Image (cartoon, rainbow, N blue to C red):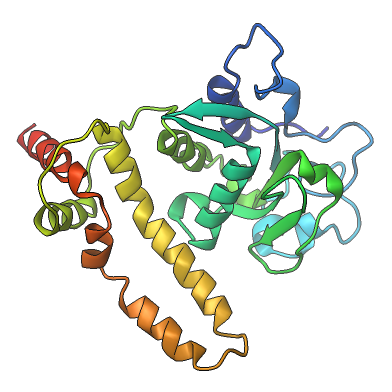
Length: 277
């Protein structure tokens, strides 16, 4: 019978550990266990919530990609995430902002999102949208106004590939997880440019917040590039020239210059500390 694979159970556990603020009490703001599902109910037939015993003839979750047909097992390959609301670092985050963030990572083709085939979601609780890596579908039913559906390519589930990094990065970006990732060679030019292109100052912002935002910048830039590329197909006067001008300006120096000057000293201090370690 269809089963929940360990790598998707790990995603479920991660989200519940950090978005179910009070596990002993049912709260409207919490993500409850019943709101994070992997295996469809017994009557569910077809789609990524089903394993090989429940797929149907020409099931889209099998036939549209060799990644799915080659990875078909009894494992389900989807996770549903329900409504939640949390406040962190003075900001409120909910299912809609979470879903929009995840879609942006998929559009940017970040490495930790490449096993996601589709996300069916609502950006605002009023309309339903669908991001499909295979560009086959754009819609979903109204149940996605209050839950977001993530489909994973079945070969990634079959291989047991860890699917938590994307969701860990989200939780880190909003301050619910500590940043325990070491600086990489890719981080160094960004930090160096930030230090040299801004004035030195002090603020109450933590170094974790600084590094979170800096790591997100490449994905945000790529998402913007994707949006601008889509715009290029529309009939606007002189639009290609406008797009090229915008893209030309998205240099590392311009990105670094956008980092508030008050954060530069903390970046420099942290860089020195880590390089000396």
